[in-house]
Length: 204
Image (cartoon, rainbow, N blue to C red; front, side):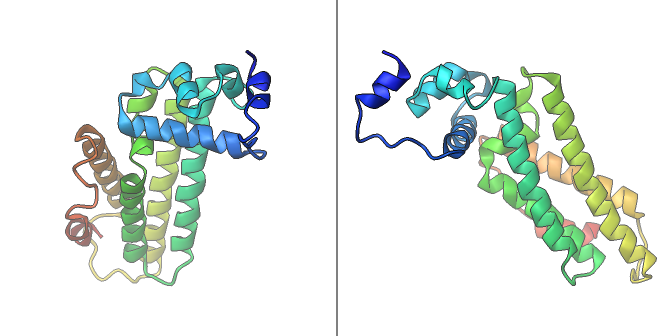
């Protein structure tokens, strides 16, 4: 039976609104990544979870790689939207940098499945362009950290210079990525934010 025939035989089943099915697919992938192994996220398993045909998935995404790109697009929009809010705040450079790092740790805790994308676990067997896109995302975040710290230094507001902004930004991203990886490897039990406040106070 075709998908159209299936839908016709189920009058109580509502047809998703434009864009809704695409969002459902991305949410399902994130959920599957949180629940099990990355290699188990196949189009067949995804279709079964959503109770649709694989052909229905391909009407929204040309490939599984494009599905992961959709997840990365969501991550980018969310993370940089929050970074823009932090940068626009009246806080000083170190507080802005600390807020950005705390936001990144919090994002991981709220989105465990997406954390596996950010640390590369979920895309290790996918197209190389996905890892390149993750790398670009991380580079942009580090550049944002570097920028808020450089503005602080340029304004002469720093009372104690221990490390330059570039080094601090690099250390901060190393800390974030380490916490993300530990979170993923622990089965999402080791929270990224554990003792983060004390560590960030010493860094910024």
